[in-house]
Length: 239
Image (tube, rainbow, N blue to C red; front, side, top):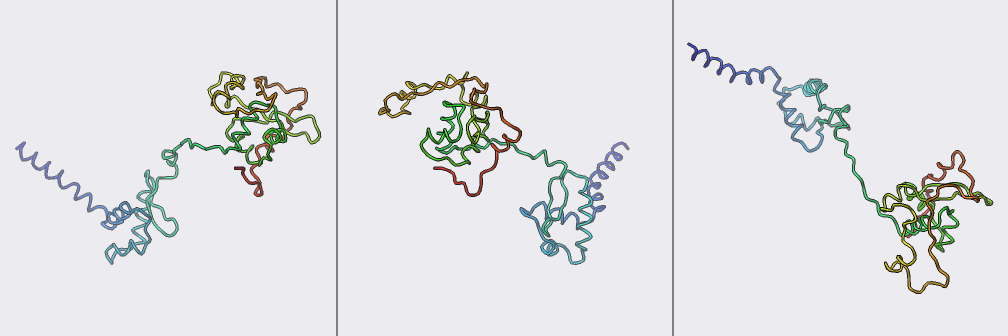
């Protein structure tokens, strides 16, 4: 008797999926399969061509859309085509953060070196040291890296902004302090300076003191915004 009851339970369990399947319209299963299998959204013409002629496509799509409305994946219509997409309130789960390396131009590297060794320094002073005019975009790129910052304004006509390096600059280049930057002999040994240097040439020793100098005024409201302004359309990056 127990054996017969057990057999009945097994038969009922085996039939349950079929019963459940019959409780859901077959066209919903077909639509579901088509949409999941497709690599791209499908238009209604394509979907309709794959379904039996008697199926009301619009009604079936609405039913399937409602069925998935509270799930992690929703059925959506975008640009006249249908596809399954992650629910909007769960999009954060798929957010991927990555650090994208950005190669600095030669002009930016030279400008960074001038600022590091000669700070506080203005744009005009950087151009004078480098011997070439500088695109505004060069400063913008260095500001975006967080390696330099506006310090103050030079007490001269026009009151240009002075620039200096940041703690992030020191940390990125593995320095304990700014004064650990290589000096003249180290730069020569590394082959970074030509042997034919002009008489009296020297490499300044940068200071870690962030206090404004006597020839600098404090920044005013809005100066940081000006310093971070986007590159003008007419500006061209240097080679």
